[in-house]
Image (cartoon, rainbow, N blue to C red; front, side, top):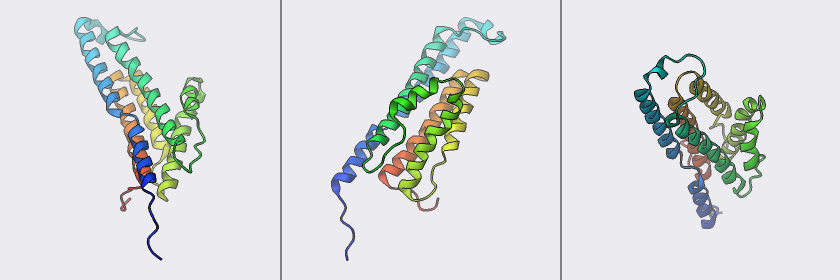
Length: 183
């Protein structure tokens, strides 16, 4: 009775899946570009700081913020593509469904908790213990939306991609099977 044989191709396949995870740093750059756009817009139009109610944002703010939200949806899609390729795992959510369900009014509030829960189920099953909590991701997404609406667009995007970093780190750990023992 020796140690179980490790299939080198399985390890190679897992590292390929880790490489396919979205590059969250791009989202942070888009949040930084949005912040720079805010600074430029306010320097050109100081009255924006005093505006009450809904104001159409200048292009310097709108464009990087819009691209940031689109990239976030790309990240959501990519997470589900990676999970659909994991050998031996039947992921319950298709990549397209993961993205398009965000556009259904009111249902999207449920959806930002549902799909991260499915990812957490994968991570926790793969690691054999509760390591990731899907509700944390949902709360992060809702906090990001509230921040974008009520506080600052760039900070809201930063929170959005910080939440994506949480997902990526836990997926990477589960795919590599390298969870810290103390947690």
